[in-house]
Length: 95
Image (cartoon, rainbow, N blue to C red):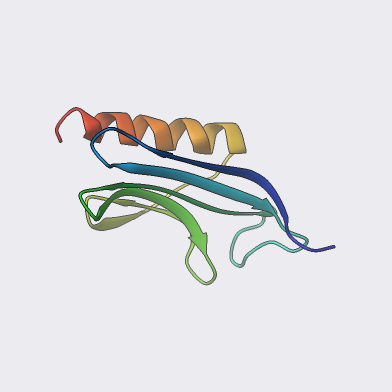
């Protein structure tokens, strides 16, 4: 089985900010994760990544906030999307 794209969403707001979410169901987990999903969620404003959540091979689940990287504990796809949107909303208030 190949990776199956289960979410592909992109919006560009009036200010040119980009919000994009891509999630795949993968046949084998991306080490060191064990949940069976590959994902990339990003919010870009003025050419800068303000918020990003991904699970890069070798790094596992993590998030990028204002240029810094932090661990992220994946529990479910629903929680991942909720956490991402929450971090984006927090930062939109100060941009």
